[in-house]
Image (cartoon, rainbow, N blue to C red; front, side, top):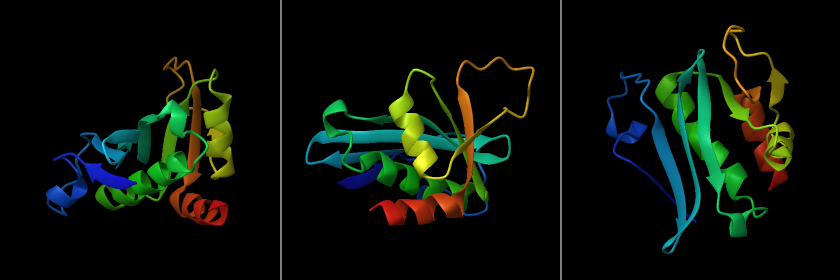
Length: 135
């Protein structure tokens, strides 16, 4: 599995820049896309979004590796120690993965926004520790 990123990745920006533009990360094996995700700053946290693993590749650890890679890049680029994500209530498999990695559900910081998903938050160091224990 080979990680790649687009031109907006942290390695291609000044270390002093803390952009709120999303940065993407993809994982490929030969010519097949295995997983995709992005991060950006939201509510003071490294927010993970548009997380996806190819259906035939689920259950093989790609989701965990994707999350850790995004958090490694995102926490450095954004200077955060916490991360967050939204997960659809119709996706219990993803919610279980996030819970295993240390995410807990909490109320979104702005209660006036009507968000039709669960908001989950974790300490980035906890996610890294739990991900290495899972491998």
